[in-house]
Figure (cartoon, rainbow, N blue to C red):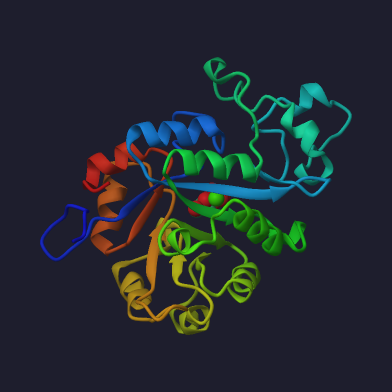
Length: 269
Ligand code: G3P
Ligand code: CA
């Protein structure tokens, strides 16, 4: 039975905590996923990039300036790109104070640390490979870390992990390397092009302003890479009216910084 409450014959969308519960805690930190857990959310979304010495870390921007104290710590290293700093340097940054003093000392987690916490929290992960054009080979490296952390076993692959990217090449690379893994393409391909995407992905994840009920139905009408109807998870929806609007369009998931607000608006879990 589908555990999600909703009108007869329908399921409410799954709610994903975007960068963790990032309306209330600094994005992509362990505090943000812990808070999502305490609010009752299983699915968290994150962004994966690579340090100068080849360590995968969880951070959204391709520079560290907005979400850490890197400018004060390393004033002469503008523009403070993630790929120009070592893992040890990044581990020493404060990734919480920019958000609020109550989170001072929060860190940029490595992907390994992040996976361990998601696992401990019994959560599920929508992992975004961010800006893969900056990090050649990051798909294979991400899969290696996932594998070593036990995230590519049947239990995870069958419902606890989705890998997504704005880069179709990156999504295709992940699919080719691990055809059993569920993937999503971030964007809104033209309806005529959807069959091409269906060869290597299972989900189409568009910005909410770009979709309609007709578009969602067109995605649902296709069988994805694993032979099931393709699904749609849309982002970033933080207000009740938009949440109800995309729910009524038939989306399968809503990716939000404020998961509690969305759940209150649409029900579900
Ligand atoms: O998961 C969807 C969303 O994260 C895509 O945009 O820029 O927040 O990574 P962005
Ligand atoms: Ca993201």
